[in-house]
Image (cartoon, rainbow, N blue to C red; front, side, top):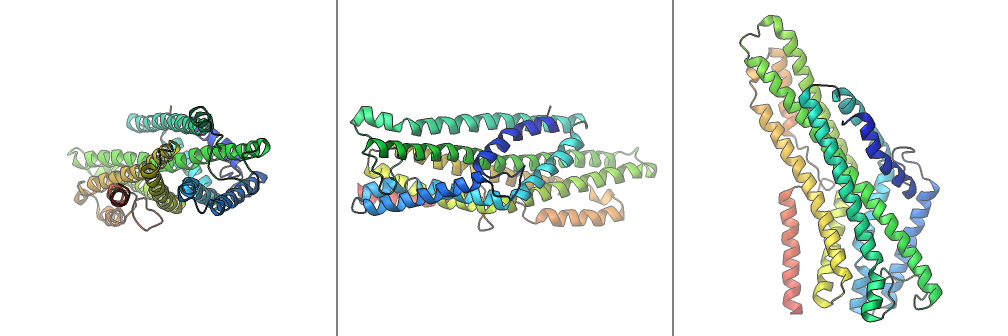
Length: 386
């Protein structure tokens, strides 16, 4: 059953990871904890290591590009960290809205409403397991890279190519210190991706649940309006059903608007940094046989694709709502309800899609534009390299 209890069970591991990361969006929204300062120190150390390594190997272009392969991933995770802290109160409030206005309201509703909640809860549990397994397997793959490099080339390699300032990883002590820091970065990065990406997916899915319930109620209203047996004595039932539809529509638009406000900057960072990382990885694919770059390329491309897919699915649901609204026999409503219907249509015509901080929509058309840019870049480097 998709109840409040099952929803809280789903959120429980996210709360645990957020505590470890110092981004307590549900238990202490907006407050900085010791773990928060620990994460900030790690960010400073990473950037210092990156700058030091780039300067150290500035005459070796290929090595510098290998060092910069992680920059896109790191920067978008940094942005997600600060966005999560600044929008923590909004995240908590949206979570409470879902519990109260969707789950508590409809978990004992009609069969159609319960089926919709159950389907969404089942999908979310499956998606969470898939994301968890994928992130952990990816982290394990990166962690095994030094072992792979040692047995294939007899070279002692760190997890990532950036080095701590003045701590040479060719020595035993330096290698251990570098590896511990980089393992810490991998673990925190996996938890950060899991939390931020899953809640970016979870909240739009509940908005679409509310949209589906709105469509169900609108269908019930239409059946009541078309029923010849419904006389004026039944107008109170029609009025009640109409107010329910208006409420569902308001909740859908409110959840989508809040989701857009929370994740707009995160989407922008994901797209910009993802494209940057993919371009660097494509250059490395053409110039080297470094197998780690294929893993970076796959991770960034998959994550970028998922972000656009979520936005596109939301876009399709909004179109479905609009088609359902304009197809109902509004002229059979009373005059007061017809005026309210005009406001509903007006609100429906305003964009409610997810965007990258308002610069461009997160839908299939924008995704195709990004792919076109990446393809043109790939063709360009092919002309110069081959």
